[in-house]
Length: 147
Ligand code: RB5
Image (tube, rainbow, N blue to C red; front, side):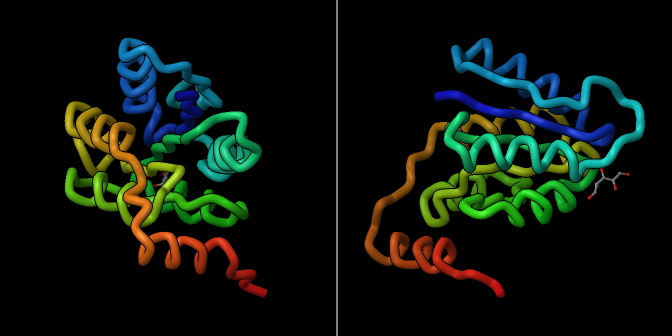
């Protein structure tokens, strides 16, 4: 699995830890920045990662900002992206089973690093359920034009 990661200053240190963890687990990881804790705009990294996932250059994306909210809202503007804001293990698993989420967003100021790594592991390791009702609901997300 190829994984794209991105963060703003609020998520930088979590993103670094996540990247190291994923590489240690054997995944191919592309870091789209930011590359320091200097103040920056979460929007730019959300778009880079979301477009790379949309274009199937990477299988999944992980985004971290201070709260995870800006990242998830921005990433969900990109067609084909289902970004899930997750801060607990239950929803990390549920959003893969039910929503087939392709981006995980977290808040670096909300959860500790070791908890974020546990969320990452569950989210990465859980496959979509492929149950009819969840396929139908994901299809409704994907086909909604929002215009
Ligand atoms: C940056 O201060 C903060 O607003 C950002 O990291 C994020 O939490 C936005 O949703």
